[in-house]
Image (cartoon, rainbow, N blue to C red; front, side, top):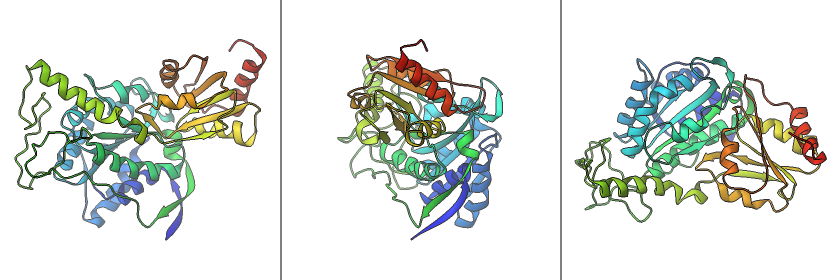
Length: 371
């Protein structure tokens, strides 16, 4: 059974988390993500869950890490300035292999920037913002339905890969309202348990250790220092650090094919839009409704790890066009992997691309003009 709802994107994120059995939320209100926290504050106490407003985003990230180690599913939500504050503790979650979910409803920056306007300016920060070498998983909804579905999916990925997982929405998607379908239940994939006799940070064949929550009788140090498989610090050993960090990267990068989530339309087209988040909606207008000749698109529901192998799926492509609400963050990633022109259609200020703007780019390419 399912039910139909007319719902805001931020509320759908919260509903997706609840459907995935999230029972702990810690956060600090910040535009344009505040509705996620408000909805969790209203719903969690009725489900024997816990909502806590922390003193800032630094403490919020620390709180969900601690909650996750008790064995519950934990989440926070923020926007750009708060996301910056969370970076140190995000690194701690990566190093300690803590499963948790962060929703970032992006707004214009740098600094306080445009609190009420949409942007996708945190897409490189989420990938590289914390110090050191690591890999992450980041999802990007383009509809209210996907706000629900991808948030629920984020919890499964966090448990499966024992890492923080990010839902990188934007203000347009977070604040729009659409009809969505909410199922009675969603698939729930829990972290695999730590096997008897196994050390707490000893990886299995998939490079991921089993998980044992606090209170289950296991003595597990949880440190941000380089550590051995018992969890004890071993931070002056170059080979230990090398093997640990390579595993933290490889457990995600080696699974990029199974993690990838995308849609392809008109893969034989000459001009392929690569899009994620709210610009997807303009691209769909151009390709599917306006039926602009020679165009297709690759829609990324998961942007990181970046699915570069998909770029070889377009045998007749003459150029990739990348509309995004920044000055070309993901377009640069695409340039690393292809030999055809990559046209960055970056836009900032808060307005979405119009269909005419994207059609004009295609017409100029078709006519051999400069972009």
